[in-house]
Amino acid sequence: MHPFRQVDVFTDELTAGNPVAVVHDADDLSDAQMAALASWTNLSETTFLLRPTVPGADYRLRIFTPARELPFAGHPTLGSARAWLAAGGVPADVAGPVQECGVGLVRVRAGDQLAFAAPPLVRSGPVDPADLAVITAGLGTTDVVDAAWVDNGPGWVAVLLPDAASVLGLRPDLSALAARELTRAVGVVGPHPDGGDAAVEVRAFVPETGAGEDPVTGSLNAGLGMWLVEAGHAPPSYVAAQGTVLGRRGRVFVEHADGEVWVGGDTVVGVVGTVAL
Image (tube, rainbow, N blue to C red; front, side, top):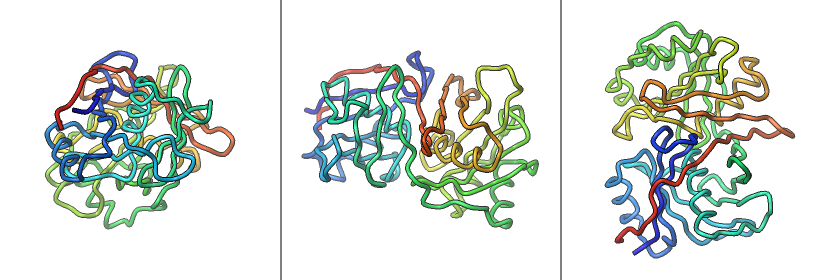
């Protein structure tokens, strides 16, 4: 039996964000057991907390989708940090815990909200026009303002549309997106009119998870935060809305501070118990 928590991330109200299943004390579990549980929960990600293996880390995190293991993901990082702290974890740094994962060490800032320091992109820059044509065909739009690779592990390509209404109106062909091998993950973003509680609307399409669209996505918003600001498409700090089409109310807080991008939001522990592994 292992302690277990399910945490809703990027929301202050349970069921309005993106849930992650977190298994504590998972050092004795095999890769096959972890993959099987992730397939069974059928959430976008299931995570496993283990003892750290490198200096400076408070814990090690392994992150599984129903189909594969990820080197990094954003909402699992915040949800797992919340679970670790809720279980009595005490970080070595008073600022917050340090997570060891496939991309290295990721710092998490504790406070009223949790936030993670965005890891470096493993792929950036423009998207090949022929590849972009395939992606936009799958999305069902050619009204593209800009596009770029913003991959920090999961494989993100980002597409900027003229406005939030264009993002919300997309009805993509998920089978077409799943069939190609250009990238495993496509993020779409567009600006909201001034005066609302969010500056941009974001959608994330990851057909391999089974659901196709991810409700609220930390890794994508981390990559977007780097690209949009550097390209002049967004101010240094802003709020992104995500999950609207799915009936969620995700809010992601992106902040540029001291040369770093921080991605944060509220977290709610929804389930506490044990899992029989």
